[in-house]
Length: 226
Image 1 (cartoon, one colour):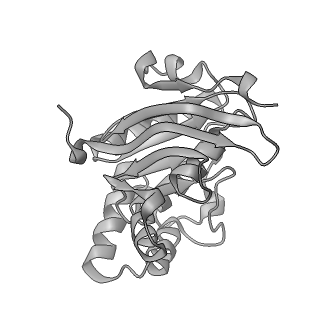
Image 2: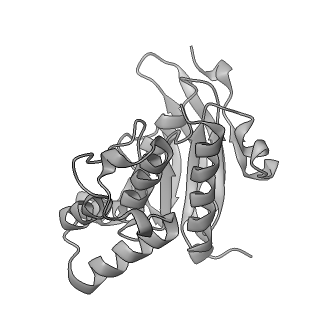
């Protein structure tokens, strides 16, 4: 039997209807376990990015429940929500990095922005660099990295404060197969490091190509979008 500690994200009977009356989600339910990778796949405008925004409570659902690390995000006040969001790493598409700074400076900028200093900051920095394999590149300027390495840097920035879960919006888009594999290797490394990942992709065949079982794929139907 699963306990609260075993679950990173739990979505129950989630419904979202747009102001225009389009039901994007109608009774969506799924569980993302700690140390699990789950893919949300579907064509453009099928609700992938919307789902991530709902989990971060950037927008409210019409109905349903969303738990992150056992907390119901829909019931939290602003102060508690801010604290919980620190336990959620997020990589948007396109990813945002500071190209005029080094790999290490990108991570330190994020840590300072969150008010994380001292020993905790150093631990977060080293863990993020280690899990993403960027330690040997930490003194390089971000603009010197290849496209795949930049995507990995965006992931490193998102996890340097040691979140419970990483929400990653279409990190494979526009990458070569080799660079996509580099991103997958990074996600698997995070999995071993105790960070769950919820990852979106327009490529419905991608999880299977990289050896992920069908059970970790959540397909979104194109017919729900007007």
